[in-house]
Image (cartoon, rainbow, N blue to C red; front, side, top):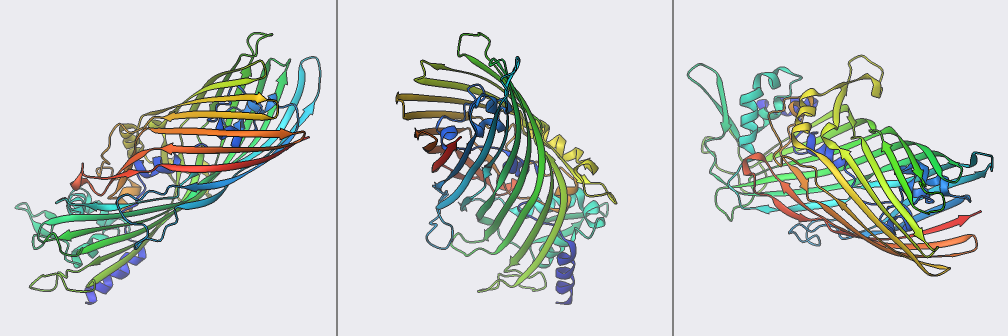
Amino acid sequence: MAKRYIIAMAVAMGAAGLASAQNTYVNAEMTQDHDLQGSARYVAMGGAFSALGAEASAMGDNPAATALMRKSEITLTAGALWGADKSGIDLDNGYSYGRTHFTFDQAAIVGAFKVDGRYIKNFNIGFNYHKKINFNNLNAGEIACSGSQLNQYADLLNNYGTDIYNRHSDGYIYGAYYDCGLIDYGYAPDGSVNWSRSSKLPATTGQSMYRMTKGAMHAYDFNLSVNVKDRYYVGLTIGVDYLNYSCENSYAERIGTDDAPYDFDIANYHKVTGSGFNFKLGTIIRPIEDNPLRIGVAVESPTWFLLSSHYDNTLRSKYDANIDDFVPVPGEFYSSCYSYYNMEYSIRTPWRFRLAVGSTVSNKLAWGVDYEYAIYKYEGMGYLAEDERRSIFNTIDDEMMNANTRHSLSGQHRVKFGLEYKPISRLSLRAGYNYICDIYKSERWDPGVADESTVNNIGTSWITVSPTHLLTFGLGTRIKWFGVDLAYKCRLQNASYYGNLDSYPSSIDMNTRRHSVICTLSARF
């Protein structure tokens, strides 16, 4: 018993995290934008404003978009989101998770200042807040599979045991697994230690996984744009993003008979907070003077994030290595160990490039097509340099994780289409569509990445997302200076939830379809 308490204390003082470790897939989950957020007009037209312009929400796509606004404007947007994923479980029986979430999505103000000079016709200054990524989701289910998480931990110990045990007592989490009777060791002929899943355990017959994420990435854009001769529009946007992400994660294995209860589980809480900055440059050109055709080009820098990550983990087992007959203890779990770990690190998101074309027809019809390419394989991760001031400029790249990112991820293509039709002067009907491709070259996370993150926080689960389709519709009206716009959005998306490498390619199929309605109130002056 004394040994168990010593191990538990060591775990609590600095042991490894588990199921939500920072890795290529978690970083991609926190930075991939599979949604469309902004004013109701922007959403209803699929966000295809990088060439059309004259929309405050578009300053984050193409900073020149606000230069086409001739009047100052204020907009406020709110709505509701529903369609939380069931993933094969009854959310009304044992899991507390609401399917509907009310959201405040966007707020903007643009000041238009008329110059009417020989070249400069007007310049505009704007601010736009929008919820860039919404993380609210629930994934859970069961797999009848003989794969075991314990084999993965044993392999990691065999590959990196010496390094793990020699660094900050990280190896004590494995001591907890050993003390709970789940992993064991022997000696090879050469005297080296050989770790394995305990030979005393019957075969694994099933796995259970539960994963709930919450939070959002909030974007604050500050914009300056200029109209040159009513044909050339240029702009600059400085963006500040705030990330608030949390994940509750649990994994359990059934050992022995198929109808037996689960014999051990690991519960994990992972929270990430922090902020970053980026910049965007863009232009819109009317190549033919008497033609409304417009071409838009924009580039968005990476967002340089400085983040703080916290892990809480609890391991529970019905086995005890100190009992000779080594059978699961009936009823409550026999032993448990708690750990926590804190880490500060940086993420560098991909560069994004945008090209767009749009036009109007007889003041009745407007259309736009936008294309975006993001180079996710160059997303980067790093750590704060020791004894340096806390700053994004004092980070050291994690070379092994970044090499794994280049191996696992590729570029992301996104296409937006948008239409607006005015049957009468005070009514606008709108429709839009987005296609967003997946970014995964490899669906298997590589446990051989012995970097700062995976050595301290061993991950066992990961999620990959399929191509995403967004369908949008809306309408709007304006009476003098006051406007009301409504939009409906449907996101069609599937994902795969993997428990651990030993059970790959078995996964839980997830339907992450979402629906939302939003309303924007605006005033022009």
